[in-house]
Image (tube, rainbow, N blue to C red; front, side):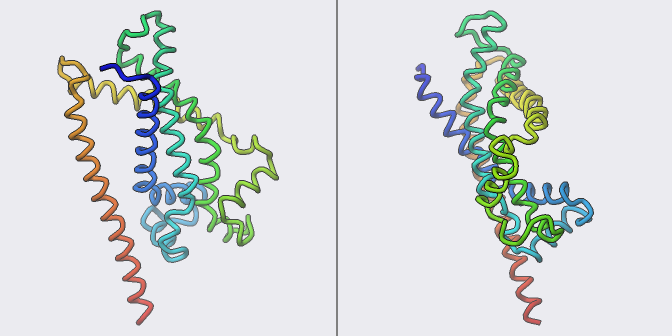
Length: 246
């Protein structure tokens, strides 16, 4: 049964939003450590040292600094990306001169995904800038680059507008495009090649039941990771409370 294009766009939008939320919830602590180590490489010896120092200085919430803009960034990026993917597939069909209903090759689908990432970058860049500044806020306060209290989403947004205007949110746009466009070419290329491989001569549409089972499995893994992550930080809190009582 053919799905209406508006319904398909809504499905793509919802799927992208769900995927973006899952990425933030599970990956934010590691992304925070990455940003801290890249921005202030002399402060930390490695990943473990960064985790330990962040927890001692700020506590558990330190790992989720910048979560709001990160959530907005990932949800917006994935939503726009998957919503534009179908549109970009039509552009590729026009470029190669085939009918609208013709199925694209894996390489052509990869190109469509790459084109779609350019649109997603426009919503990703501003939120990514705010997120990174919030993640490195504690270190910037220690180094004297900002004063205490300027550590909220609104204060960062206001500071960017006052200093650089609205275009200040698009600092690093060219670098983001250089990262996203080729990155999503391989992302969608790998996705389509994997579908072709697992289909083993059958139609890719026959993989729906298999993919549904895989999604259920991934949800179980996601829950396990979240549970382990929560227990790890709970263990750190209990350990810190024990040593404080001594």
